[in-house]
Length: 238
Image (tube, rainbow, N blue to C red):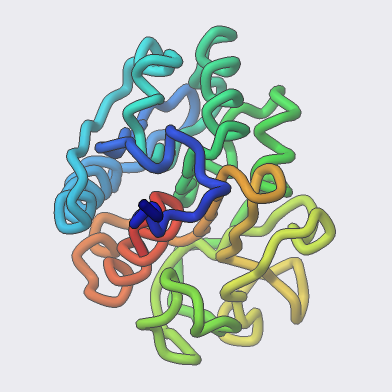
């Protein structure tokens, strides 16, 4: 009898059968006051997508057995070195095996001495101006993370700069900062804020959003729609 399974054959057991989302919030550098609000919002979004959710700061959660249950791992404003050597090995194997990763805001400033993590994101954090209103330009309305957003999205954030443009490493940019709308940008007309990629061809979905500095962001319907689409995409629930 022909199989009725319509799942993407490239997906591994990790992504097909996993049942929950691990929201990791450990910091070894600056700690954002918005982390509790972000963790609560992501737990709600995970449940709405039919997934359980666990928020933790314990690096011992990064084991092959624990990650095998994860449809996605969310790195929520993690800063500094937040994984052990064993945790790094388990996380890398999870991603290369087809796991999904959503990296939010200060996660661009995590694991500064781990080359794999820098390659995963495609760039590194390089500072920001003061918190202020500005404009996000959405480039791709076909992606779940940006489908619900207006072409020009006005919001208040820190407008992160990066050491390099992630396009140079093959990332697909979904949204950019309009540097004419705020003070202090350093990347020019092509200033990526949200992008996605496959960690290896056909496996391991990764999405980074530079937004999400303040607690108020996680109550904003537009930002929650952005996170919802991003989470569903990396978890293959979109």
